Image: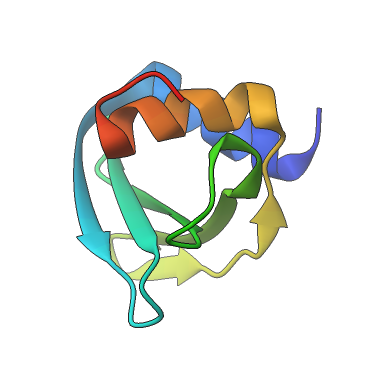
Length: 88
C-alpha cells in the first residue's frame, strides 16, 4: 500500500465528517476530519475522477504536514463518492 492509499484508508475508516470546496484551479478539495481532530485534505482536477486524487495537507492542533501523494483508483473511489455523491 502506498502512503497516499494509507492516508486515504485512515481518513475513510476513522473520519467523522467531511467538507467539499473548489480549488483555485477549478478542481475539488475534500477535507475529512479524523477522530483525533486532525483534518486530512485531498484534491483532484475538476475533470478528474477516482484515479486522479492526491493526498495533500494534514492539519493538526499546533502542527501539520504537507503531502503530494497519489492515490490509487480503488481508494480514490471512496473519495469520489464523498466528493460527488454518486458512483464514479
